[in-house]
Image (cartoon, rainbow, N blue to C red):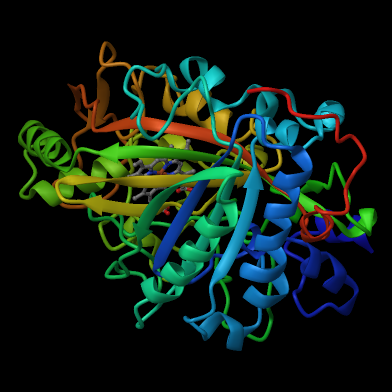
Length: 463
Ligand code: HEM
């Protein structure tokens, strides 16, 4: 059954045949955690620490301090609703695998994962390390593991996370150092249960649906375009490269994790400038054109009412007068047929520290090159995606030499699809990458077998 599990479009969660796969796969990959307080422990093993001791310390966390949450928990409504239950997920960088003694397994992981984000950042994002927060991210001495803990919803999750934090710090004493990045999701966005990011927009709206549940009200069935909400789990999952106990039913996923600072004042100023050029009544309208959605998450093409909020029917706005070609959502998913395999599963978490605001951007995929890197390099930063010369992504793109082409929206709101008046405005620099890493989130059996694994334990790689 395992072959069917990951190849079938949104398999049903109550199918008894796929329960081993759901139990073995980290829930954070497959389903949103539904919590508001999210703490990230970036772990760096101490130089010279014995691989066996590192694995022992990790095994202690996984078995006695926090339970790595399986998908079965997150699809179980009572567990989901228990906001005191800490949802945990754990992943490693390639350096981490090397330091745990798995250097011999290199061929089982992808090249881009092994090279890591720091080495590929210039090529992928158009920017190197010059803007990185060096106290938090040292590109020469990257992190080895990432433990994510999430709790709280209508209750304060911090006491539960604080308790885990203390135990984890104590447990790693002498073996690893931990940098804690604390995020908080605010749920005041428009679509119920969806978070609001720091520019004020509902986020996490467009997500591939990896599992289906007939017993709950699901996604809308009336579709106006070729938009396919569902995906087979192999969009994000790969067969576990280092199985724990049941190789056939073990899966894991690659994650791109970036700390992206958001310059809210610059965003608002840019929107004011665009508002003026397009002669729009409000700044918020210009902001919506930059993102490619209304603040409350609803689509810009209003005649799509009653359908899936992601069913933009790109073909009906051929001139881009309502859904600009240069906006973030159209750059990142123009909904052209045949591009579904580039989709990513986003798990971004916002942070605010005084005036400093940003997002711990996280996305899962089966193939970093074809998904996260493709989106950033070939879509966000390519000025002719999805239309010749439309400009780079205004939110994360990097090229101020090629202004975006913004169509003047029709005054009466009617979609004309005629040649609209085009205004050229350059919007860039609204976000800054402060650091990042590529992680791999393995199967739960692999994590449970950490202190038993000895094969390939070839000693410290000396980073
Ligand atoms: C701080 C940086 C970012 C902010 C504030 C941001 C914000 C948003 C917002 C508000 C949406 C619309 C809501 C939704 O559809 O869920 C969105 C959609 C999306 N973003 Fe971002 N984003 C950021 C970075 C990125 C990055 C780095 C990538 C990938 C390289 C990315 C990829 C996407 C994708 C694929 C969508 C869905 C588009 C769709 O299917 O309609 N975003 N983002």
